[in-house]
Image (cartoon, rainbow, N blue to C red):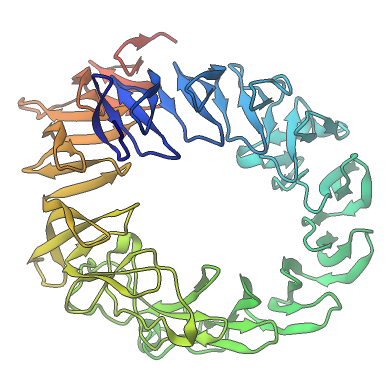
Length: 582
C-alpha cells in the first residue's frame, strides 16, 4: 500500500488521521496522540506523543506529558522527554530548559553540552550566544566554553523579555555579546554608567570601551556614540567618520546620517551620497533609499491632497538611489520594498464600486516600482487576506517578473482571478471571493446578495479549487477554514464539522463552534437552557470524543494540557480529561 496524501486512512488494520508527507514521512494521530508513518504505510512509531514537531535533518522534537525530547526518523527515542522546553537546533546545538526554568545546551545525540545553570541563553549567532547566570553575563560557544564579564555593579542587571538587558537606568538591546564579523559588543562600568567597546572571541577588548553606545560591526565598520554625537570606527578603533552627527546607522556600503533634524546618506569618506535635507531616510535594499521630502506635495489623486488637510504638512515619500537619482517621485504616503519589487501608495479619495471592502476600511491605491522606477500606471490595491479590489497591473514592463505565488486579484466590476508567479492569469474562472493558495488548494466563494447600502456584498458560500481551477470541495459551505492542508473546518446551517479532501465528514457537523488545538479540536455546543449555556469538550482529529462536553470554559495552555472551568472552579486537565494536581 502506498499513501502519499494527507488523508484519513486505514493503516495496519487501524484507522488513523494522517498528516502531510515530508521526505517520505508523515504524522499519524489516534486518540489525541501522534506517531509516524512512511509512504508505504509502515508504522514507524505508534501514536504515543502529545506533539511531534517538524524534522530538523534526522531528528524531531516531541512532547510527552508536557516534557520535550527527541526522536529520529525511525521513530526511536534519541532523548527521553524530560525537558520543560527545547528550541530549534542550530548547527547541532539547542537550548533546553529544565523544571527549574534554568537553561543549558544539548546536542543532537541528547548529550548535555552544559548543565542547566543559566537564567537566559540567546539564540546562537556566528557560533556564540549571550547568557545571563546569577549576576554574571557574557557569551558561550557551541562547545560550552563560557566567557563572563566582570560582575562589579551588576546587581542592578535584570533580564527582560526577548533578551533585553536592564543595566542601571539604561535599556540595552540583545546585541550585547552577539558576534558580528568576529567582534561583539561588551561593556565596563565607569562610575555610575557603562562604557561600551568590542571584544574578540577570547573575551579581550580590541576596541577600547569608551563609547556611550555602539552598533554592531557591518562590512568592517561600526557606528558609535560618544557623548551626544555619533561617528564611525573601524575594527582597530580608529575613527573614519568623526562624531559630529545626531545619529548614524549602517546602510549596506553607506551610512544614513541625521544632523539638525535633517537626514541624508554619506560614504566612508564622509562624501555626500544623498543630500542631508530630508525629513527621514530608510534603506530599502538594492542601493535604493526611501526618503521623505517635507516640501513635496502628495499625488493629486490622494484623499489628503484633495481634502482641506494641508497636503504639504507631512510631506511625501519617494525613492532615491545611491547616485542621488530620483527613482520614484516624491508624492506618496507610503513606500515599501520586498527585495525584488517595491510599491508606493496613497489613501484614495473614495471607494470604487462594487467592492467587498467595508465602508470603514481605509483604501490605499498602489503602484509597483523597481530599481528603474515606476513600472506601471495601473493603480491597484490589496488588503490583508486578499479582501480588496484591483486592476491587474502591467508587471511585464522593464522585463521584470514579480512573484505573486498564485495571488487572487480582483478585476473591477467583475471578480477574482488568479495570477501565477509571472503575473499571468493562470485560472480564468472568476470568483466573488478568493484566498491565496496553500500548497495546491485555495478557498474560493460566491458573493450572491448585496449589503444594505450596495457598497459591499455578503458571502454566502465557500469551496476549494486546485491549481487547474478544478473544484475539489463544492462551493456550498457558509464557512470553510483550510486547516493543515489535510482537513477542513466547515459550517452549514450554523453547525460546524470537519471534512477531508474527499469532502467526507471525519468529525460530524453537530457543533456550534470548533477550535483547533494540538492533537484535536475544542468543541462547543449550546445547551437548550433558559440561559443558552455553552458547554465545551475535546475530540481527536478523527472525531472521537476524548473529553465529554461538560465544561463551562476550555482553553489550550500548551500541547499537553487544557485549562477548564466547571461549576465556578478552574483547574488543569490533560487531553484525556484527567485532572492535574499542581
